[in-house]
Length: 293
Image 1 (cartoon, helix red, strand yellow):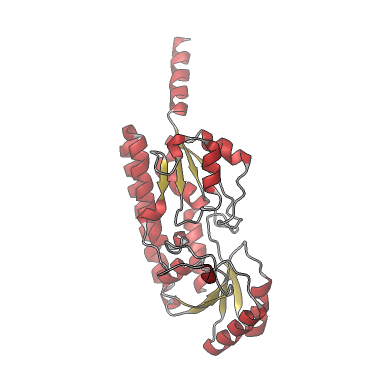
Image 2: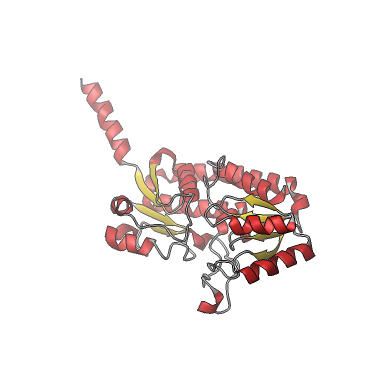
């Protein structure tokens, strides 16, 4: 009986020793789990099928945030419209911006497309730069390292485990990065059009050339005039690929494709956004395939 009680106590202690971690997006949840393993319990706040800019701050999300030890966000103001009201309602001092349990992973990367100045005439631009950096596989390792450091800070007794898991993760991601770059080397210089400024980092990784966006300005729906101008540009420059995400309307992309002979590729912006991308490896492999094949 004493032995059973001891085992039960140990199991209970192990359960309560877990860090409760919330991440805004699925890719961050996957990275955190790879680094933390059984030492962390991860809650992902946003569905990968939805527009990452506009997530409804549901009461259920407030309940989750009240019990979290750590909140990991993408940053770059991608969550500016929905995370602040959740944090105010959750009233959890640990995970407030500036708290010990708050982590903005945009600190780990260099943001592209930072505007010299910002005005409403430019559409919904992000003043700090483009926040969709997760589509470039080379950004995931510095992000994972930052997460590993934060977990070690909050749980120093398990730092060795976090470091070990990070090194293993780093090796696998660097190997996949090298493989993808070699496999799709012929993709360099390929001209493409995308709906939103969503895949700039992935295109930079493969050395691709963005000819234009279906949106005339970020967050602004395409007009007939802009669409016709884009069709003419695509014909002139012989663009054969349109990159379409899962959450914007697809009617315009399909119309442009019908007029230019281009192919519309549905590209994931997050892990799990399209079928067959439930792991980080599948996510990055699918991005490479859709962009380059």
